[in-house]
Length: 64
Image 1 (cartoon, rainbow, N blue to C red):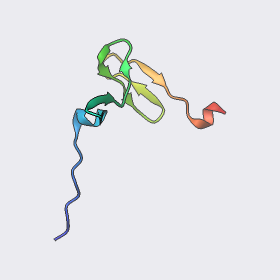
Image 2 (image 1 turned 30 degrees about the horizontal axis):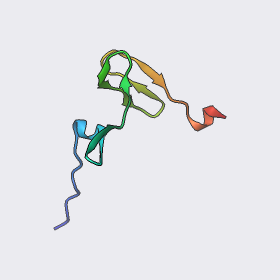
Image 3 (image 1 turned 180 degrees about the horizontal axis):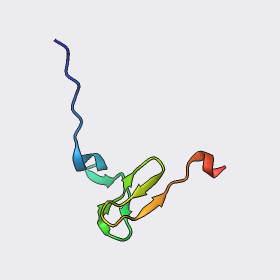
């Protein structure tokens, strides 16, 4: 029988890193909603699903 691939944790646990016993957020918090709401990370932007706030992320080709 073939080995089953390992399952990755889903949900909120993907948004944090554990280092030295402390949780660190991978994404930024929404400046309008506060610390409890994280911005979703897309390829070219970061958006808040609650209030609709959006930040554009400059790519390497746009910086030149």
